[in-house]
Amino acid sequence: RVVRAGVSPFEEPLALAIDRPGDDTGYHSGEPIMVSARIWGGHPPYTVSTSVNDLFLGMLTSTPGSGGRYEGSMRMPPQLQGGATLHIEVMDSSGQSLRKSRVIQAEATTGVPGELQGLPERLFVSPVKNRI
Image (tube, rainbow, N blue to C red; front, top):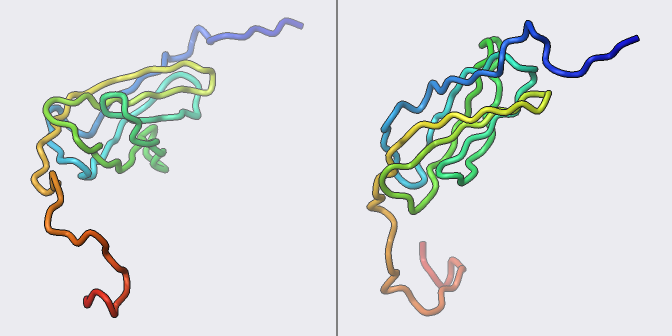
């Protein structure tokens, strides 16, 4: 009996296409990013992760009945500005991996305070001390 390990010659190679976000889409720090991708070929099931400038954002999950669509809602990391690269990496059950990237824009966030001023040195958390 002969057991061969490896990729079948009739098998499609692992493939990945990024659906969302679009190229050069702008996001502020902490803003939600809807990420979706289509994956086919290789050996399912797949493990799909996403990152921005190599800062891990999270995992994408399979959408039932969608034929290989994976998606998830992530948050834009803080303190990025200018062009940022969103990466989606997929690994199949045989260990093959593939990484695709897309450039998005990290926009300055106006609501982040620089230096806090005017706060008391000591703040008590009690409805009696600090009227709400």
